Length: 165
Ligand SMILES: [Zn+2]
View 1 (tube, rainbow, N blue to C red):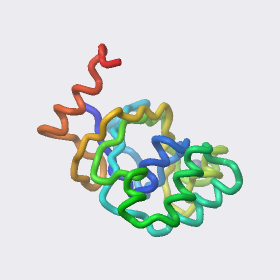
View 2: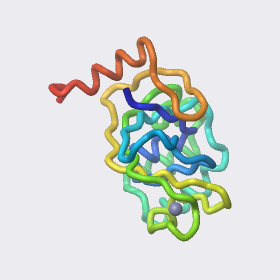
View 3: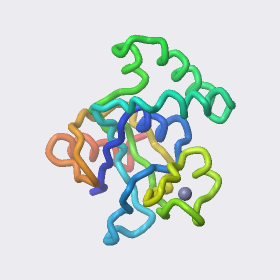
View 4: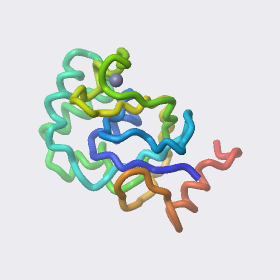
């Protein structure tokens, strides 16, 4: 069973749809987990109030997919209820593969320039291959890496059957 990680919106959607390939945390993945590993991306209930400037900056510079720019530019003027459609909360959106992690600094690559928080002590989790689910799996978020249980785990299992198109 994979771990899940709860991200504030709009960052969870940014990972799944906008090419956000660095997840910023002030802690590394547990040493017991070998790279690469798959991770469920859970959109928490919280909205990051500091999202607007960095994401819109990237959209304006043409560094995001066109669809992302539309979603963002619309969301900045929409009421909260409408923008939730593009940025669902309280649900697992899909999965990514974590291929590595490094401390912000000398090890940083190009993606860190776009998505990395370079504050001292930050860890950059390197994400690849986002696979968004056709249906959201509602779930409450938790701190750190967590393991989906019960109905949430059952619904996720349905989504990773080999014959699931
Ligand atoms: Zn980095």
